Structures are given as structure tokens and as C-alpha cells.
Image (tube, rainbow, N blue to C red; front, side, top):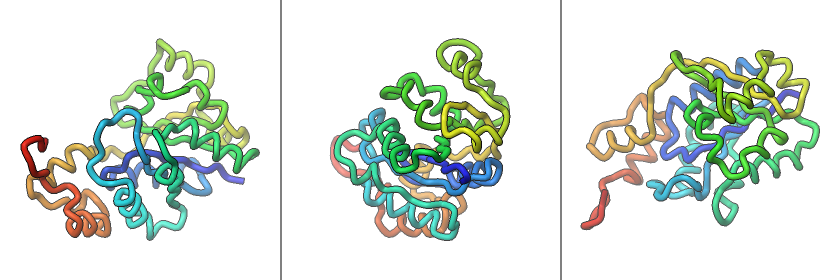
Length: 218
């Protein structure tokens, strides 16, 4: 059985950078599928701009034409703060023998030591790091140790073992930031070609990133 890719995030909003990274990793790692897991209540952000239900709707719209992209809404349905280790624990129980690959961007990987129970993640899944040109993997500290002890350069290993490896893979550089994308929309500019057309339509219809009213609006 081919590995399952697990791609979590706030997706506030989901954009073409997310989709291209997921597509390239799906192809290069020969994954059975990529599961997009929108965060319900993220531990590291005080404020989300679009509601969990709206972010889920945008992700569903974004992946509708790619049959190997599926949406997993368990974190939106789960009460309390969303932790990746909880999601991976559930997936491991559902797929006890299957390889799971947690797909991370380089920024997320560099922040991994700040994650809740982060050392419990590797026994549950492989960690796949998508990096851009100019990025160098950490050689010191806890992440450096992780790379030395668990790094692999072989896709085959991700298929043969269910968890426990760190694999880094270059992806096409699309410098799209959700933060900058929201600012662009607030400024009245059109997000066309930065997000899928179906997502753009939801953003325009719901005005979920319109300037906030009131004295405390950002």
C-alpha cells in the first residue's frame, strides 16, 4: 500500500502554493493520496480570519478536481485546540500498518520543537519537509540530531517503513503567503491566479477577508 500524505494547516485561505507543494510531493513520493487537514483551533495563532467552516469549504473547493486530494475535517469537528500529534495518533489507529507522511513546509519544520509533544510525532509518521532553493537543513540542535538519526534520502524507505524517517524534498518556489494574500484582498486587490477560481469566488461572495469594522479593527 502506498503511503498517505497528511497536509495540515490553517489554510486561511488555501492558495496555489499549498496546492502545488502537495501535488509535487504526491507525484514524487508516489503517495496514495494527500489528506488536507484544516486546523480547527490552532495552538500558535490567536486569531483566524475565516471561520473553520468557511476554511473547510474553501479547501473542499480547491481540491475538488484532483481525485487524489481528499479533505479530512476531523480537526474542525474536534473540540479544543488542534494538535497534530492527536490527529496522527487517530490516523495511526485507523491505519496500523500503513506508512503515514506528515508533509511540512520548511518554516513549520524549523518550528517543530515548539509543537505540542513533538517528539511523539516521528513514531507515528514520517516527516517530509518541502524546501525551497537556498534552504539548508539544520545541522545542530534537536532538529540537527533528528536529521542525523532519522534522515533518509530514499523514497523507497517511506514505502517500506510505516513511520520514523525524515525526508527532505525540493519543490517549485511559489512565494505566496496567506498573510500577504489577506492583506492584498483587504486592500481591494483581486486574488485571481493566487488561489483557485472556486476559492476566489467564495472569498468574493462571503467577503471573509474584508476590512473589519470598529475601533479595534486591525
